[in-house]
Image (cartoon, rainbow, N blue to C red; front, top):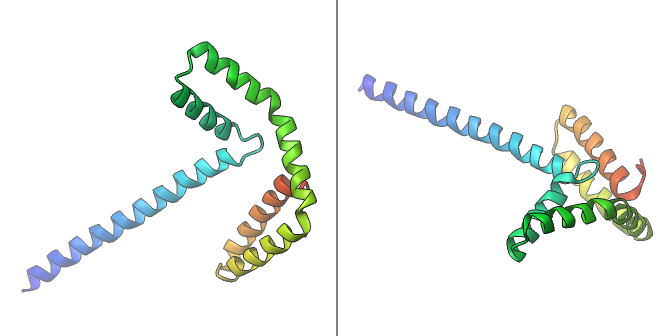
Length: 133
């Protein structure tokens, strides 16, 4: 009987360690992916769009290079236009975003709140041109 409890304890420990490891690795990889999508120049986002176009349109290598160059060349203007659109719609969008952020922030520990606040500032700089807070 005692041996069964030991075996159950070992199996439960292995399960918990596996779940914790899986969660940590998932968080790491998702964070890395999101940073690339929403990073300073969105390079990963452009590559993702380019791969999708290439796959769906069956682009040749030279077409893929040319399309990639077009996307890179127009990226600064697209980002400027997105910023302008966010500024034009900004007050209502900021108010909504601030309400959602405040709800999320309440769930976090003080250490998580500090990191969350920095993420919010980065998002605000990207989408609105400067942080509102």
